[in-house]
Amino acid sequence: MISGSSGGYLEVRVHPESGQLMGLTVIDLPPEGGGLDSVPEPELLGGVVPVFDISEWEDVDPAIRIVRKTVDLSHVRLPEGELLTLGGAVTAVEASCGPVVVGVSHQSELTHFWFRSESTES
Image (tube, rainbow, N blue to C red):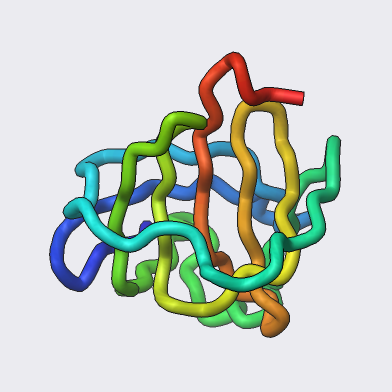
């Protein structure tokens, strides 16, 4: 579960053994603001699945398997789709997972989820 420090709430489903991203549900849309980094365009990897490092989750009750995190969340509507930004890290690489692009920083932190409109999917 990812809560926004100023609003917004995301449910991220992760495979409990492999750490693979399985799903994302926007429970409450975060406030508008933010956008893409004003840095060189990140590398785009197609057809991959982001994997979370679940080694830090050893203290999580296996019957519940809920990890809560609070970050700065925002969203912006773009002609190419809806963008949800997380924190303020600069995006180094993007992973294309069907209609969703997941941004990741050099420190392996999530930076954004971009829900592309049908016309921009590749």
